[in-house]
Image (cartoon, rainbow, N blue to C red; front, side, top):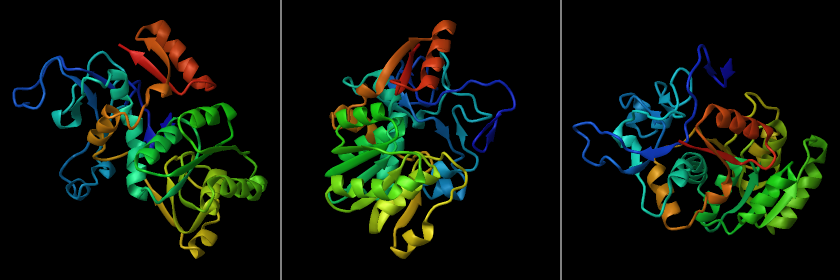
Length: 301
């Protein structure tokens, strides 16, 4: 079994979106205490390679990341984790919200990389969980107008309820691209400054590249395909910058602050909750696999 570039060679524990209560601490840990409610950043980098030393630790080739083979994940009653990757939650931020810091971090990192600010009009391609948190992050970063597109009308209704200024249901047919771009430009009011492809397919990336204005930016967030056929030359001729992201770095403090102050509300994204029993685990994964109304499926251990 393969997950992107990771190969599953034996049974393992999955999960990387997590928060919990500290049960024990090491003798040298001074910043945390037993009983603290905390959120965990799930990737442990080597801290010695040039990438780590330069601050881009999320790109560390020796990264041990929860749930990425061969590293076991956090869907367990207890985990052991370095204290520098454990962040105390304020009293008004729940454990569920703390666990949501992980997907929210993807959106925050994407907005940082793309330079979202109060002068940038944003297009979000894909209204799945990552597209939705990227939309929330873009608004928190000051984006004055955000349009979201997706093939699923239910997901678009959620995006609208979360604050999208406009939504467009698109198709998977590349022949519809021209008409869809016209709709995007009409709804957004002016040209698109920054597009986020939160899916990662030929059609979605073509949408982002074509919709974005000359001199704008496209950020590839979703990694649906390992190779694409896209209109890159045409985008290059308009000096559209294409950037990518991989996970995140240094995002937990900001995510927690955005939740504490209410600038971002992730609670509507948690659509289903289950206990940590064999029966409920099976139900939860079936619910998630079906899609439909499920956005984030949460286990309460």
